[in-house]
Amino acid sequence: PTIPQLYVKGEFVGGCDIIREMFQAGELQTFLVEKGVSVKGAA
Image (cartoon, rainbow, N blue to C red; front, side):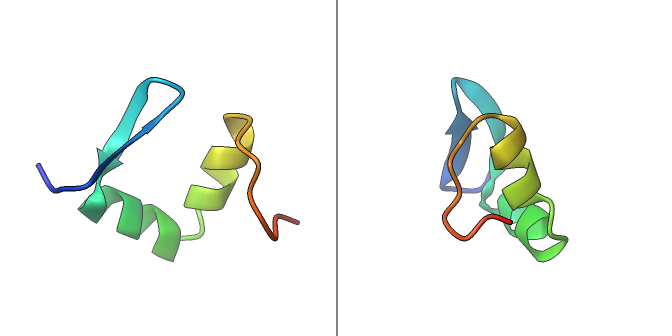
């Protein structure tokens, strides 16, 4: 596992490598919004 590890509302999302991939693919912001997390600069 890579550190840090991200949990959103108690759900494990992934380690640094997965989060970086999600961010680069444009999926991280969408995922966070769908989970009800306020994202600064969200469309």
